[in-house]
Image 1 (cartoon, rainbow, N blue to C red):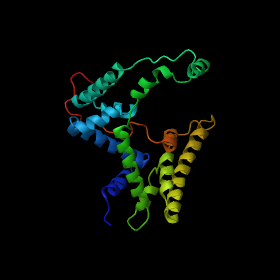
Image 2 (image 1 turned 90 degrees about the vertical axis):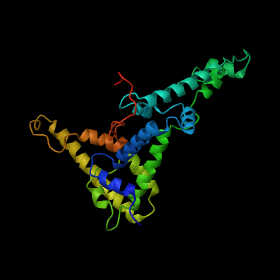
Image 3 (image 1 turned 30 degrees about the horizontal axis):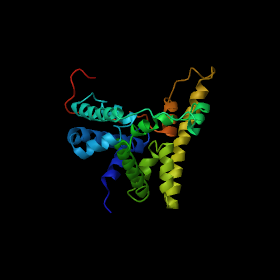
Image 4 (image 1 turned 135 degrees about the horizontal axis):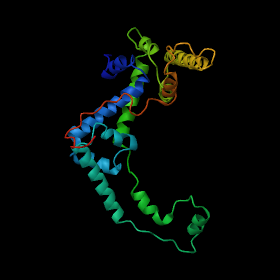
Length: 255
């Protein structure tokens, strides 16, 4: 079987710092949002799906204007917010009877959601997932599957993976859930352990040099190990690996 584009993307991204799947997922979301703003702003189905999701999640809504507010983003946000206002117009406070059990329960437990406003709160809730999150999840799965399918073999990715920062812990868990071959399991785990053992060694070196007896020693490869450890445990920062999208029709005076 001929290598796929995802294989070449993995091969090219492995030498770069951080979790390779985090980096490629971020790039995929960038391309998705760029394509949306350039080509799909006026597509009825896309607009309907965005309205149903109440726009985008917090991360991707801000990512949409990372390169500055554009006409496309303005149109999308106006559409979503206008739809929210229309929903609010029909909202009513549905007071409970003074003798109802639910009202008594709410009086005893202030953390219990109000039944009187439950209908409007539900109507204002998103009815589908963030489109960018769906794209991120799809590409995440593609890259993890491609990595596992091509880890071993003469032209496999194992050597590049061993020389890389490997996967973050969340993506390692996802990868392990897909592994069906013992050889792939052993190779993946061995390579990942070696990567993280080096991070731990660098953390130890930073701690050692914080001792007054060694604090005059020059810093070496251990520099930045704390940030690498955080990346290893939780994944890349939301903005890491992302580029400024060349948004169309950027509004004047926006950052």
